[in-house]
Amino acid sequence: MLCEQSDRGGGGNLNKITIFKRSDGEEIPVKKQILESRLLPAKCFKTKVGILIELVRDEKGWCWYSTLNNGLGHGLESAYTTEEIVLNGVQRTKGNFACAGCGAKKFVRCKVCRRLTCWNGEGVWNCAFCGNTGYPSGTIKSVGALSRGDK
Image: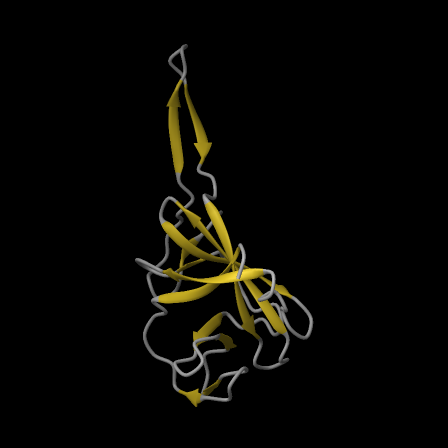
């Protein structure tokens, strides 16, 4: 399964199949491919470890796909430029998507520093970058992603 709806948007398998006609009349199902991917720098609040979130785009839009534990800090800003990606539609995640540091299933974008920190969904959230605290609400509308290129 490529991506599925998050608990906010309801369930459902979004792994789409395209049917191609063969010359003998049979139909062949072919899975859709990932169109592009980006890395999102983030941090685990519990362990303070730098996390890279892989965001992939398929025919339905962007999907929160996987996370990588990247040691004490991701350290990729010097090699990549930052771009803002608008997340249109319902937020989707791969079934086993979770923080690579602590296993939390949710990430919150800080309204002060605009960076991502994981959250277990309980109590007050704390930004691992700037220390801002609060009770998260709403949906992330856009994220700063790392893309190849000159700064």
